[in-house]
View 1 (cartoon, rainbow, N blue to C red):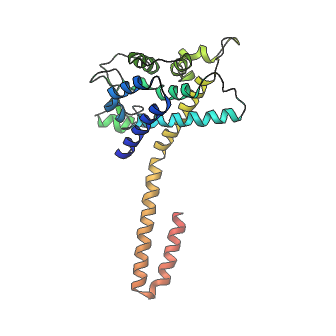
View 2 (cartoon, one colour):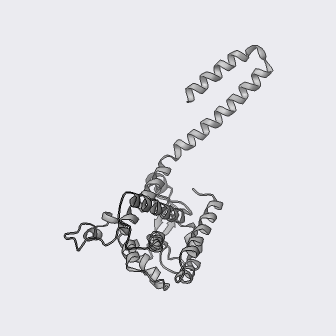
View 3 (cartoon, rainbow, N blue to C red):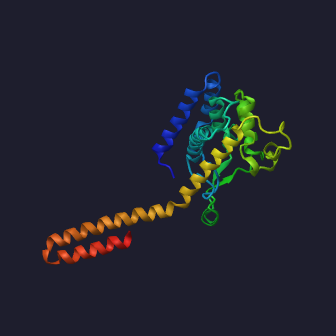
Length: 260
């Protein structure tokens, strides 16, 4: 879960990237975001807790992480000798920023993709935090992402279009011809789709691991709090009765060793 202040900061950072990165498309993008702001700020990145970021504000948090992962991977690929030509930094950030835009749903009230799951059974037994809106047309996320952009007059380059369209890689069977080329001519002309796919996968895996490790983190914090409380109690007791100070010191030492 994200604190309200973190959700607010993420959204401000997201809008700042738009204004700092794009020039000719900035106004159209801001018009798009203004129209879906209330929905987009609080939407999750997925429906189930064990997927990734299935909580309020999870979508924007995920997108920001994908952008960071894309930049980091670009540097890694470049340092290892990969050919990073054929696309611009703006195209790379644009694709990372909008690869999952379709998760916002269709324009208009009540046309969101994710709705809060109200069934306790589904939440407890399936980790299903959100359910899919049955009242909107079925669509693949990349298709709706591209449709939304054109609906608001946001132009895409071919590099951006292709990267968004096939960013799920081989997880989508329809993408196979792009990734399993039968000839040199059929191979991808740039590595942007692969770079985005890896960045998205990395971000989602990190988010899953944070969910997976959440209980251990909670237990660790609780243990540390208990150790502080006990040590303070031991200290107070020892100060009140010097005769048992050594015994309490020994107990405290054993306790600390056990918890470590």
